[in-house]
Every structure is written in structure tokens, then in C-alpha cells.
Image (cartoon, rainbow, N blue to C red; front, side):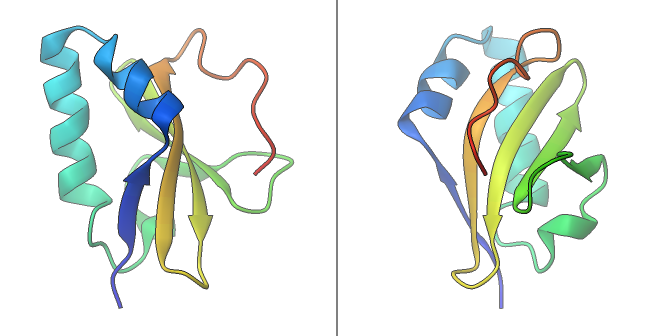
Length: 94
């Protein structure tokens, strides 16, 4: 039982706007720790977002990956990717 990683259109667009070196770092980190993992809640640098049931955030340097974890579907849906200073504003319902 391994989880599948999916990026929303908004997250994909945000990832494209990140400088190339940091983008490579984020993509490598997601491929290593999230794509095909057995338990995304036990990944290093991951924490549940307060006030949500399925929302998790992952810290990768100065950047944050906000994701929704669907245990029934074995799916990790990346909702937002960005610098730590601006990524948390108006978090969508998770």
C-alpha cells in the first residue's frame, strides 16, 4: 500500500514560478519522501496543519509544501507550494 502523489493545477503553477535550483530541490524531495511512501504522516519535517483533519505541511528549506492526505484513496494531493512567508495565507479547506 503506497500513496500516490498528485499536484493541483495551482500547485503546479506555483512550482513553475519558483527559481530553478529550489524547484529541483522540491521535486527531488517530493519524489524521495512523498511519491510511493507507505505513511506520509511519518515523513520527516511533516506536521498536521492546525484546524484541519487532512491538511499537512512539509518543510523543505525555506519552502513549504501544503498537502491534503486522503487515506481511503491512498492519495497525497499537493494543494500549495511556496516560500514560508506567503504560503499560509487563505489556506483552502482541507
